[in-house]
Amino acid sequence: MPMMAGPSLLAVGFDLDYTLWDQGHFAESFFGSIAWELGGRLGCGGERVERVFRSTLAQLTTGHPRVFDEALRRMGVEDPGLVKELVRELVERYHRHRPPVRPYPGARSALRRLRERGYRLFLVTDGMSDTQRYKVEALGLGPCFDERVFTGDLPPILRKPSPFPFLLACRRLGLQPSQCAFVGDNPLCDFEGPMRLGMLTVGVATGPFAARPVPPGLEPDRRIRSFEDLGGFL
Image (cartoon, rainbow, N blue to C red; front, side, top):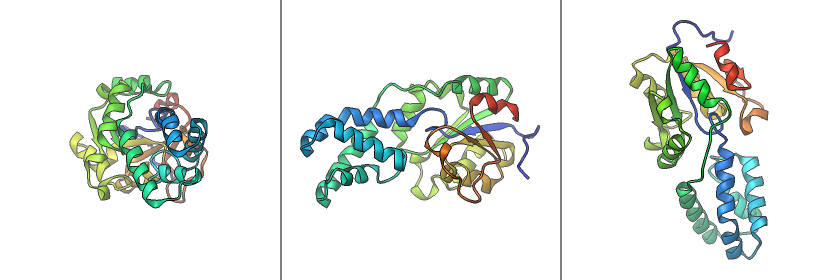
């Protein structure tokens, strides 16, 4: 039977990318910024570079460890040394990319309403810490959270889907995991750790995972289609 929110629920946690904002816009902005330069180096047009990178992203999703490798392979770059060199450069430039960003419609107001109702809020997000910190501040979400866990500061083994970053957030708040809910979009990263701790899990239908089947055992306790639905059971 799905878990029910009750008076013992004191805090709500959130993933960042594709949960509170469209991370795809960040990646697509980056592809546009490097397309013509990279195309010139590879002897092809910038339109083709951007098209291949976008289609690769759509299939693999942002955060996949080999998006750049796969896109270069599809463009016919076969020299392992050149692929390694280009991937290293692209990763470094991606983490320095600083486009304007904005939250999903209703995300900021939903966070505000939860705070007004007395919930404490926390963030657990993967990715390069400097980039994730930039996103949080650029989105105007920094003041919304009582605690923020950037798993890029942790050893890889302790990042999502490990329960550790979620437990760390609970400890910083002085709460038990059973007193917390976690809202995310990616079943593989956002639900396994909280489930193992006994948190209420909430899947939001945003981003590329909204239309994908959920792996067995990772179905969240609740699903919402918009942030307006979030307050209906918390």
